[in-house]
Length: 301
Image 1 (tube, one colour):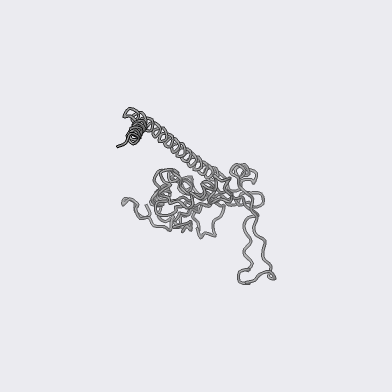
Image 2 (cartoon, rainbow, N blue to C red):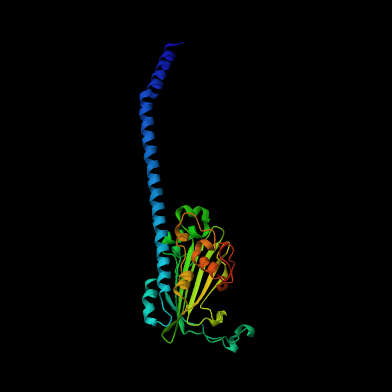
């Protein structure tokens, strides 16, 4: 081997040894990387916790607002003045609705669809609806975040949203007005259940003869719901102003945990337990199944 070749090999070996880190340097580098990874992981966990708490607080607040609206609507008396209900309508962002104008025979394309309907028993009505992130309400989502949350609520499976208590629901209240007085009050609660939507719907009026109630002041029925994707079922409650306090409680009370619990309610018995208790005691008041009533309860008792 020549002199120049030997010097070249020696220089290369020195450069290689100088470039290779020592074991102490490797340990220092590893500790720094571990600390950096720990800080990034802690930051991600804090961010996820903040998002979770924010969504959880929002869902609970929206559910509380829906419950409060139904509670206030339940206190409205038939025959009360229109002015007495305006604060409720304003507080929850309600609107005034007018009956559609009749269609003239000249403008009607299908005569059988334009038969003169019966005159409504109201002059106009006030409509209020609430839904988490305005998914099912008349209001449009606000801003990009609102649209993103609406997309999340509609397209994400409820099984993914349940841990956050982000459950789709809707509350609607309508108040019919005639001659400046309350004629009919309607309240409806609809919420996602384990196997489909669940509903509790009630109507109060001075006279409910159109519901074939006869002399009864309270009747319980059933309804099919068409909410996406799987539809559902609900209980309907028709009351006259002469119903007892117990009957009003059975019709208008519900399990608010169905809106915010980590696990959705299984069926109508869970959403409206008081109505089913009343129906078990008074089976002649309803047209829906009383299966599951205690065996000690006998018809007519």
